Image 1 (cartoon, rainbow, N blue to C red):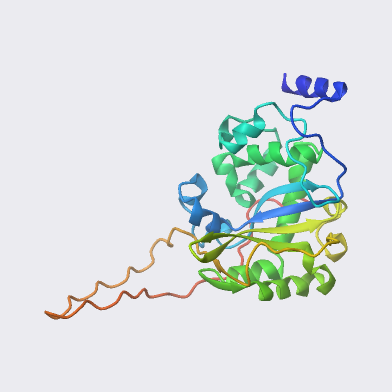
Image 2: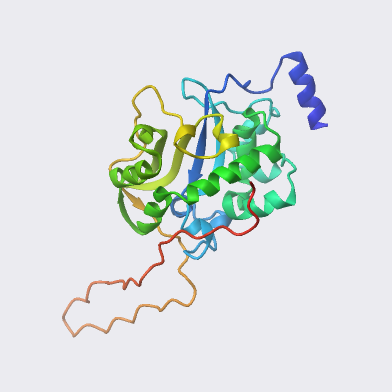
Length: 286
């Protein structure tokens, strides 16, 4: 029924939401899940997020956004009347879920952890609907790009800073090492503030339309014409996963202070952390 409705809207030249304008490039939106869980700890995908899980130590996939020459995103193209309101109210599990092969679903369970809260359905309506790809084509291209990001020096540099403060300039140098100085404005970092501290939330990489079929390399990156206003300050926190690794030693109990003296200040012993990005599980889409 849904397909017939969308077909009739298309033939009539009408749309219940925005119509897709000319696509100049795409934005590959990757999320730093520990940062997202810092602000939204009740999400299903945050309950068991540790350093041993793929998205606890790697950038994870969120969306491919179809963008216009002005760099504005196309959103909610040829979708149902209530999709936008349902997405904004986070009623994701009540939204339409496109059908894709089981092989893709298996990989997305690792690479797209927001599926656990059904947010993939909201992101499909908001962004994927504007790419005009079928669900299978959209996700197979997204998986290929997400795997390429996992192999970058930028991903490794972010993983090495987990639980500490990162410098944006050093992350940009890591991006340059893979893609060259002239394409540095193809990447941006999105932060959210808690008090006076900024926390890494997302990484956005602009790619040409050809990148969706040819993969991620310096020739496939899209560079904005206008100067880029970056979404993070020079210094920001790369949060660690919210759940400690099972079996880790608990800190020793503090001895009681002598009578009449204040207690000793708290100290938290920090053990060695594996910072090499983990490899996603499941078959590779080529």
